[in-house]
Length: 369
Image 1 (tube, rainbow, N blue to C red):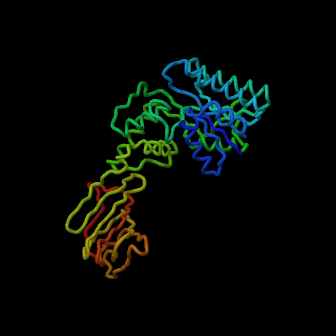
Image 2: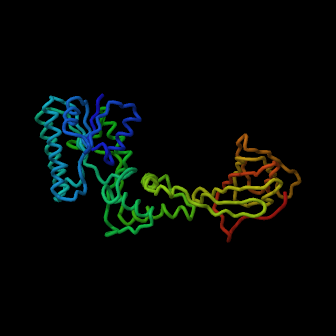
Image 3: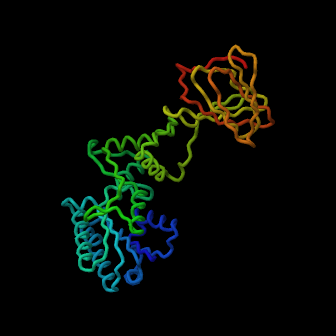
């Protein structure tokens, strides 16, 4: 199948093209502003399916709305008709088509043109009135407020929230592309006149701003937000895509002494805390027990001996672990325990505990194994 994508260099276009290639589509006609009329002539003659994504959101002059969103659509349809090409056409419109503003008016005019073309030719047209689409490769101050907030917050720029109670409808780019692939393969979601993307999120502008601000704070408080919430998960993925190239990494506070180091990596109220423990050769750490707090130890480098003794018992239980064979060792409650580096190099252990450390309630009691 030969697939024509107009607006292939835009936000939606780039994501669509990447997924088409992932799925093995190789005959792609990728039309951008850099192409000539002759290119478009050839593409419309040979294509088997059209993704018409080209358009403008925020032009310098209002006249560009009609030029790009209506007149280019007219040109595209004229060329398809000229070549008697009955390829199905998927068109991205906007929920703004319901409103009386220059952008919405141009989108509505483009819709009317498409529907008229379908009536005249019998060609199958798939019109999607998309809400605010967000995701990787979107442009700040152009595609969506999500892009603008992610860009600004990741660079310590101020963000402006004009109306915290303003309600937004958001749609994630991967959900859009998934629906477009379904349409290409003949199974779009359609209700009467318009097609639709199944997953739409509603959020207030103030809540959106706060949530994106919280993503930046995770680097200092080491928290992981609730990724079971689908919108949070998708917004966080989008936020990371806006990180400046020199700020992918961030430092952790290493608590160092002559024995080695202990460094907290992740803290979550729901899933506990993850830390990295480094012990020098011959060093023993631990020798304490817990009422309720429980842990998991995973040695990833070096050789260690984990020892347990139940309170008031004499029997000592030993587990020898090393980085050559990864094993998780559960640390039960009511057992004093320790870990000693019995190797010749640093012992590196990933430690998970079911609750974040609270100095007011440490639930940690010294007792030698």
